Structure formats: structure tokens, C-alpha cells
Amino acid sequence: MSWRNIAQAAFEALSSPIFDLEVLGALKSLKPRKAPGHDGLHPIFFQKYWNMAGPLILSYARIFFEGIHLPEGVNDTFLSLIPKCDARETISQFRPKSLCNTAYKIIRTMLVGHLHPFLNDFISPFQSSLIPGWHQITLPKGEGGLDVPRAEGQNLALLGGLAWGLREDNRPWSKVLRKRRGQSYLEFSPNDHYSTISSYTIICGQNKTRISKDLIWIWKVLAQPRIQTFLWLASLHKPPTVEHLCSRGISTSPKCFWCRAPEESILHILRECASTTNLWSSLGIPPSKKGTFVLPFDERLKLNCEAYELHSLSILWKIVFPYALRSLWKQRNKRIFEGYQPNTTLLYRKCLELSAEYFASMKHATTKSITTIQDKWSPLPEHWIKLKTDGTLGSCDSLLVEGWALRDGLIMALNSGIQFLLMELDAKDTHGPFRMA
Image (cartoon, rainbow, N blue to C red):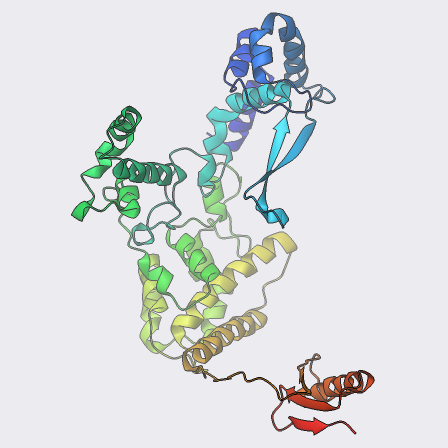
């Protein structure tokens, strides 16, 4: 179904006449004693006195769905802060909760019902929390996903743990809980120990669901996490290229924005486009890896991201390669959204700059040594006071800044009438005991 057809169908669903039973059904779907909003009335009031309050709710719903406006005051909302603990000291220790009017909740429930058949077409597949059943990113990384946990699976695994702990409890409610929720997971717990992780895997079926790609190597690539995520998207052909958008009915022309090739796929952007080939020529591909550029896209990605050859600037090629891919994608986006004209020289410099920066940080992290300083505290002699200073000021010389801090400290000590002073500075060779004259 094309985007235009989806929009038309959704418009017809939203503009179709509403019926009294639909409004009443939305009201009955609300929990009777949910916290009231600005009107101060629980849903149970409207459910019990529908004959009296129903005409007002029906008029609100018709006004909204006929496209006139939302009646004034219907969406007024109280914001309540619910404490998370007993001793509250910061705002983060409160959980905000919106208290909406019952009439607004009814309209919202009806609106969701009208749009529900079209959610899979409206929402990107990467917004998995909004689409029931979509599980690509919830798969383990070794199976091509992002290892994002599914809330339903986590809740059931935790509930199974509760049932496991109550398996010897003979109280009636424990038996019901064990039978309904925990029994099917207990047999998978070895050594008489319950594992939430193992149960989650079983519940979500991840021991049965397999895909053909093993993408665990992506998360071992020497690059920042955002580069790894882009490689994951590229390997699944998921970046929003024109070709991908057309397949979802969002675009009209599949042509490349740069070279006007018939199709703009991720393979075209990262290997075949004229601007792309210029960058690869400028970078200087290691001789042993030139042949990989004619291999299938996935194989080419892996071989270059695991290569140990050095670039001409003595940077590992497996670092330069993923940063080059990301730079090409960013340049493509700037061309579309900002009208940027491709510049191979600037792109080449930026790519090597980012690669060298990451390579240097990696070398620093592996060679950095940690020195433990034993600093034993001992009490000062009687009548002595210790002055400790430390300071920094932009790019100024550290010793100069320390001296300025020492000056202020000495003035403070003199004004306070201190006679015996022990000074301790961050800079070396600038500390020792002094007696104030």
C-alpha cells in the first residue's frame, strides 16, 4: 500500500461517523477507579450514570471527530509528583503522573482505535516499542539484533522467579500463581537454581528464532558505538536510502541525489557513486584489500573492518574503513538536507582526522599506566594550620595559576592571624612549612 493510499484510508477512518456504542465501549474499557483529572470525576461515575452524563460525553466526541476542535477544558491536566522513596531530597526522587479528564481519556481511546490498523505503516520499524510483534532489535547481537530487552518477556521472567521461590509454598494463592505463570519455566532451570536470563531467553523464543546473519563481529569493530550502529544498519540494508523509502511508499523517485543513478541503495552510496569512488581512490586502499570491493556488500564490510593492514599514515585500515563509510553517509545527508556540494578533499581530511583521533585515543588507553600514590594522613603539630591549593585557568601555565592561588591563601592566613602554616600545592617543589613573620 502506498503512502498516499495509507493517508487516505487513515483520513477516512478518522472522519467516519462515530456511534454511541463506540463511545460507550471506550468508556467501559477504562478502569473504574483510575485517578481523576481536572474534573474530579472517576470513570466509574460516567459508567454508572451514563444515562445522565452520556449526552455530554457524546457531544464532546462528535465535536472532536467532526474536525471542529477539542472542547475547551477537556484536555486540562493535573501533573502529580509521586514520591519514589520516604526521604525525598531531589526532583529525581519523584515520578510524574499526568491526571487527565475522563472525557479526554475516552476521546484518546477512540482515536487509538481508529489509527490502530495503520500503525505498522505509519511508524518506522526501528520504533519497536510502538509496534506489537516486531522483534528485530530485541534479538541478541549474535543473531543480528541490538539485544534490547522486551518488557513483556522481562516481566514474565521476573514473575517466573517469584513462582520459583514459592514452589514449596502451599498457600492457595501461591498454587494459583505457580500454576498459571511459573510452571512452564521451572523445568528449564538447572541445578535447582532459577535464572532470569535463561527464562527470558526461553519466553522470547530466542533459542528457536535464528536469522541467517551472524553480526556479532560488528560490535567488536574498533570504532565508536555510533559507527558500530551504522554498520549494523548498513549490513541489514536499513538506512533510510531513497530505495528503502520507496519500498515503504514514502518517496516518488528512487534516483541518487548525487549522480542521478537509477537507484540509490546503501551499496550505491558506499561503493558505486561517483563521489564515493573518488574518496576511496584518495584514501589509498591497501593492496590486499582492493579485491574486496567487488565482493558482496556484507563480506566486504567484514573483511575490511577486521583487516590488520596499515594505512599510508600508519593508522590501522580497520579503523579508517568504518569511519570512511560513516563520513560518506553524513556527506550524503548534508547534500540532501543542506544543499552541500561534495568535496572529496575535505571529506578525505575529515575521515583521516576522525580515524587518527580514535586511533590515538585507543593507543593512549592501552599504554596508559596507573600509579598508586600512598598518602598517609598524620595530624599536624600543635598550633599549625595546613593550606592546600589547587587551580586551573584555561591554557595558562599551571605553575602560574598555583602561585596566584598561593598568594590568595597567604593573604587569607595573614588576615586571620595564623603564625604557623604548612602549605601543600598541587605543583611539585612548591610546598613546605613556613612561619609567618
